[in-house]
Length: 303
Ligand SMILES: [Zn+2]
Image (tube, rainbow, N blue to C red; front, side, top):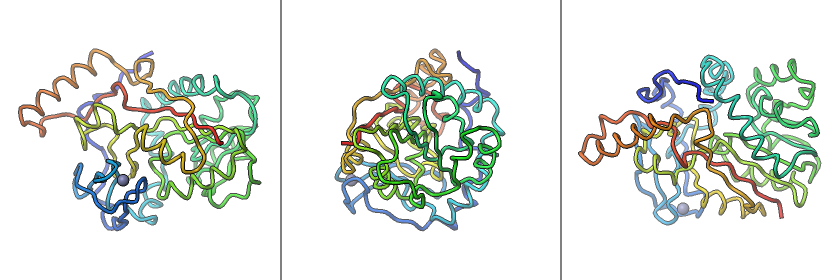
């Protein structure tokens, strides 16, 4: 089911990130262990990622402030629709993520946080009672027109919603938690909105403990200093979620079965990059391909 990419290995981030440097003034301590000590891990233009000296967590520091992020996400859905190949790949990936999730839960009230145009909600079983929140007004408008559950899609921050406590059986963040300005505030809200025994599904989230993240750093295909503010791993995310009574029950690192995998090309690219880096030619390395361990699907249970 491989969809051929257009030369995705050679492209670095194809956007003008320097247009946003005026908004880059949010400094953070480590959100996992609160340590204030960190060191440089990666650099991309004037953007920097740092690594915590105590727990090894990685994040963009400084990152854009909220005004900068709001400007960047103004027309996120339009930006994403432009790339037809990625849109097709994402559709195939939705099915894989759904199949993984629905082994654990296949009915009840579900909330998709950062649901975009409702695409992932749409592939979930119709036994679910579907809700979503999304900051991109155009995406919300699209979902409202297109789907019957569109009436339950709200153009709000999760923190500003008024759902009753324990209202949901399942809360989903698909490729979302690494984008959040303040993941702790949002996780606190998730804890309150999930019923006891309810599930929290995080998927399509990059894994910074992967071989490619370590080898490629700022050339890792998941490194994006505006979109991805935090670089989680299985251990940092489990540690963070457990502070909100969300405990890991299962995990997966999808690669081979995904529409992004091209096994021969990917291994050839990674081997070439490994050799170039060892020979001191990091500048000649292309952006990383899809690879083992890059992405995580995790299910947590609200205890
Ligand atoms: Zn730390």
